[in-house]
Image (cartoon, rainbow, N blue to C red; front, side, top):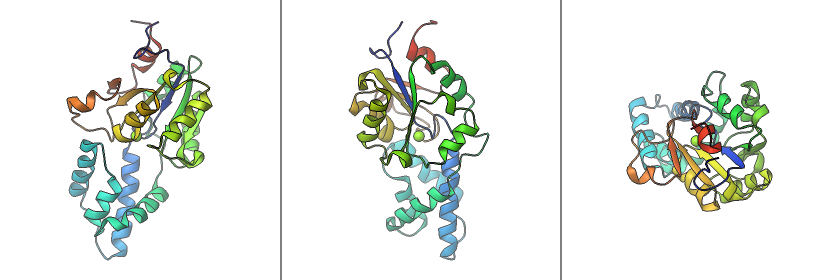
Length: 232
Ligand SMILES: [Mg+2]
């Protein structure tokens, strides 16, 4: 068996937006909230090209608050970030058909060999979406921020998940699509790290960015083989 990044993997945790569901679901919620707040100010919908430019800027930097940047650009000031955040949460859904096709095969392959968990900043309703889409039977640990009461990048959420799995941090791997809220805090706690390059990941990651995780992958297809070894 080939160890992953020098470790025997006993638990794998997945970020949800990006690795499991299309980050377009979050974008749609932010846009709905933005347009709603602009309408209350007598303004028209946010310009989509300008929105995309702000979104891509935050993706490229892998740092900073998207909602703060959007509040400054479209609502007249960063002080509207918290209101935009609250409204976005109300609009946030994961509709049927927005789970990536490689998720269920990956979870199915890992389940039973390692402890499998989600570890994500999400509303509690994501649990219903994962049940509806057939992923729930493969998930042992539900590290959903709204349920646990801690948000990434707080190391406490990673420590909670590792403790729930009953493994050492060095025996766990976190799979996420952001450097600031996934790769860096997971590495800080001692987990192995996989960076999934879709959604909020940058369209053109730099060599320095690519050097941060143990592994960067375009999707989940090869993950079971890479994490469990064998089949090479
Ligand atoms: Mg994500």
